[in-house]
Image 1 (cartoon, each protein chain N blue to C red):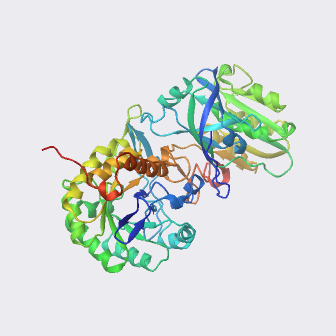
Image 2 (spheres, chains in turn green, red):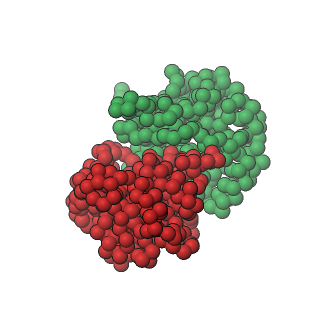
Length: 301
Length: 272
């Protein structure tokens, strides 16, 4: 079940979604992380961020909203504290970066280029909770600019993570690929809101937040399918995967790999279950390798 | 059965398919549920909690597990107990389950109350279901050193008094409406006891309950320089430290996770 995304070589197509796995320290209590395809770490920014005031999360039908606000200790702390620990584990590590300006993204890419223990970079141009983050991924020109500059500053495989809060996801994907993206991952969260009818106040201190979980899977699947049709680089599918059957649907739609996010909260061992399930599916259907599954959707007519 | 926890890690929690051993209403809309969960029972300490699947396995409604304080753990029997109040859909579903039903849970999670190391009484102050983790904490204490303040809105909603008495601990009740024990709130009773000679030497205070009670009681302890630990509550998505949804903010502006750095914190870290 080995998969390759640019120079990122994974033993299986199951990765963790940024922001749902920390940097693996807590999850290591539940299973051997070396069984994962890859760990995608929580977003790092140049400077530490305290994130948004609580309440930051609220459950919604078949999903949840989050407005964490990219709380993290900054790239220097990531390099000093997280990478040494991750290097002890035999699993590929993908750093996820976000900035408020093109130069911040470039500075992050450059800084991580000389850090030991990273196998790829995922670019978060799609966080709906931070004003600036939204701008890049909603605009093809801005997307192109950011990705171009990042590519100039790193030798690593660059995965660009798209926001679904756009009119035309294909347009954004194409812009990222034109600029040199080695892979596109999608989707990040859908922008949403929840109101407490008794207090007549928003449930989130930030008012709006990002929707994730099973509720978003149909949107994610559709976008993965559309983007996979349109670009030549590998696509990574994210959005509401809580079973191996969900993961297979993304592979069939054209994803070469998948990320599991919110599902980890419900079942900390979900990534293992998904991996085992994909393997079982391939055996049952007599598919010898992933290439036979990826993009195998049969359309009518 | 439980998948074994990794003992090398700071986080020593297990994913467990617990089985309901008993379920009974103890007062009002409060239920006591006992589960067979050997790995959790072995490790659980007072103050820690479990994340509980309240709906059917695989159901999306509710989607996320709910955090619940562990009220009791019997290592020999391999069982734990939870004191659950029906406040919404998830808790209602859980409290409707019957003995024999499986319930997925993760635990024990979070920090436990730690014994204050100085001479004197250990004053446990619990309001409503907040008394639950304090009961488990009391299990590991010398009962003669324990003074448990158990608070409720009314007599029929006082919880766990019999259990503290079984441990041999001093049980001191307060009810908002005066229907039993001291008439007033927990913090008023605490202040009274600290002033009337009952609690001359206090090693430490341990608080669990609604935010208003914790604020008031923590301030009382701060004024008298009594080491104080508080159990903080927050909405949780994961319960084991990865989502950053459950943070509380300290005096110095630091964001701490209720599920990893907490739920038990030193009261002095916060502004009350």
